[in-house]
Amino acid sequence: MAVLPVFKLATLLLRTMSKPIASRLKKDAGLHPKFRDFIINAAQANHRFSTTLQRRLYGVTRFDLPIPKLNEEKAVQAAADMLGELFVFTVAGLAIIFEVQRNSRSEARKEEKRRQELEVLNQKNQALSAEVDVLRKQLDEVALLKSKLAEVEVIAKGCSHKNMFQFWQKTAEKTTVN
Image (cartoon, rainbow, N blue to C red; front, side):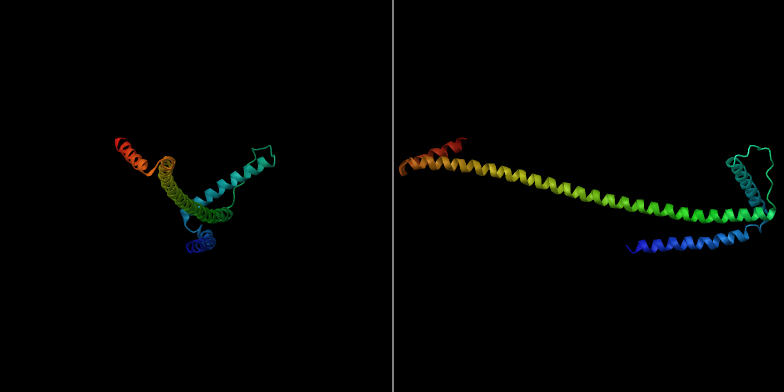
């Protein structure tokens, strides 16, 4: 269980560290010329999309009005903000995905443990059922012997000692024949 708090603290640390990293990305975003051109184009496309969406939401019927371009510094700033937010969102999303997968694996291990415990209980149940069957057979044999003993006692009450010996001899002969 000590792993859980360490993991939670590591996730919190990663999220916290992503904000300064995003700020650094924002700051350094416009320094490289090719990357600067790329983010300016991305910012302009985002500006066109959001402006068109706002016009439709507000019910502007004239779509032929041109959408003014952002100046270069505003475009760099907007793209840098978008890049920073994307970085923070990506880190948070990955942390959530990792947490869900970890919980899923934990649940799978718990389910496997429950399944194994259930299998052990089923095996014990089968063993006990077999033992009950053996005990029932033994009980049937005891009941059979008890009934034979009762028959012998009934016969013995009606016979003398001499006849008793002959009875035992006849009973023994019947048993060996069967």
